[in-house]
Image (cartoon, rainbow, N blue to C red; front, side, top):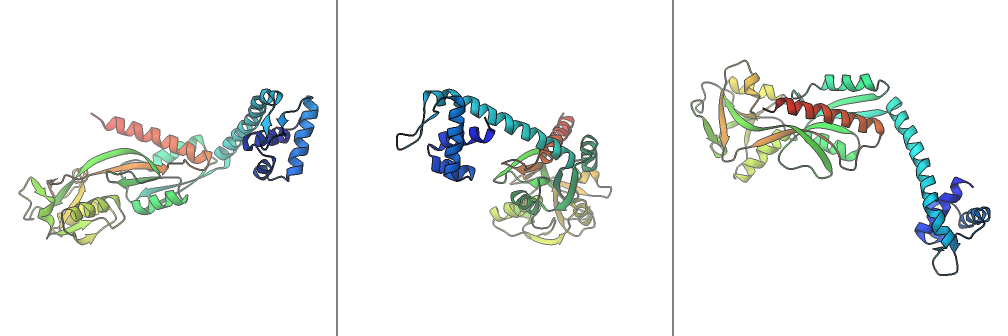
Length: 301
């Protein structure tokens, strides 16, 4: 009894046709028929009823079918186990992250993974969130740390570990400096300082301004969120930044609560919904999810 005989037998049963089964296993139909005949002779019983328009199981065939499937499943499991071992020995993972992501210690995360899987090659690249999401869809990246608004990108699974509101920051001499809150519409004619297009924060601000009926007047763009605060502190405009950012800035800033509407953003681990291609990528995603879950739990009151 050979595995290919069991494979052909299961294929014929599932396709209810020798012709379709042959196409499925990429073998000429006479070859499929011959191998199943040999299997029947070895077992001493006909397994398939060929008298009708479609192929059906005989009683003996119905008894053999679950064992044939189990045998093929065991072989597939053995191959998967070897693939998993090989992938975690010589695998490759491509990871992306938003520029200047300070919410998580990425080097420490990767160092811990590398200690457990020293043979896995890891590439790390930086880009804006839109490009990272596109790279996940195309398979160029296996996982990425991205900035997002409220909606989850289609075809992408996420695990958010930072979720905070945005605030307005200005320098001490700004006309808004004495206020505690500011509606988004009050920024209609102001020079804004923002991250470039394609970033999560910029997309959220652009969408909110469009909903309010105006296009933001972006005077300065910088890829590092900390630079936004520094520019605002120098009196060069109004910056909309995550709430935690002004607290980490050494210069003098005035922070205002943004209202009507209140905007929120998330930083999340993202990966393709259908799952990564290889075992090394799956292992790194699992490791990153645990690290980020612990990080979020530590930050909760």
